[in-house]
Image (cartoon, rainbow, N blue to C red):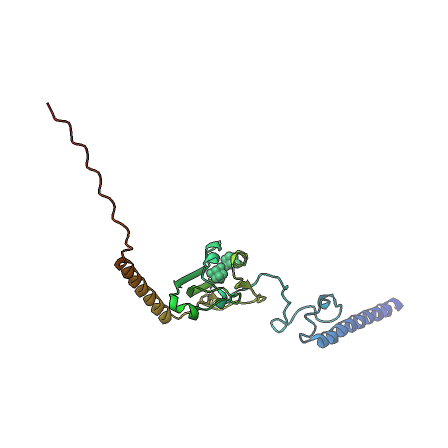
Amino acid sequence: MSEYFSNIKTSATTIATGMAITLKHFFNAVKRKGDAGIDDADYFRQVDGLCTLQYPREAVPTPPHGRYRLYCHIDDCIGCRQCERACPVECITIDTIKATNDDLAACGKTSGGQQKRMWVPVFDIDIAKCMTCGICVSVCPTECLYHTPVADFSEFDVKNMLYHFGNLSKIEAEAKRKKLAEQQVQAAKEKAAAGDAPAAKPAPKPKPAAPPQE
Ligand code: SF4
Ligand code: SF4
């Protein structure tokens, strides 16, 4: 009989101990709600409280040199297309138009002082294909193409994963193309008028006459 009551007492003690531990973690978890402290290096070493993050309100900070979403600072792009050629999955598409001489000032300079000579009406990155290998970033001479710390950029519509960075609208690009073509035609005419046309090939030497037949 005494063993019977002893077992009941042990059960009640065990339940009370378990509930005390549960309540302790519950109240600690309530105290931990919010994103304060997520940037602390010791955040995940804390023993008490929530062990899951309240995403997206809380998020694990990305490392400072991690390779995440690409960004092109188009104002510094010189349209050399090295990134396009280097990309192993061909997810960068670039179109360029040579700036005419009277348009160089409008075309501007990079932040490093280099004169830009190309308009870049199309600079698209299909970020859905990008595998963040970083090759394009490493070949960019002006360092205008770089990874950002943005790690979560999912979309409901995959079309939204095509990022546009070009610096001209379609109408502006057509106007620049037309102007360039006109200037090229004019330059060709002026060259021809100045006698700079390539010299005509010398006439071929006459073949020796065939020996008289007997
Ligand atoms: S990071 Fe790699 S895959 Fe992505 S655009 Fe650059 S070269 Fe292409
Ligand atoms: S490598 Fe850099 S400068 Fe050249 S086209 Fe690409 S982003 Fe522009």
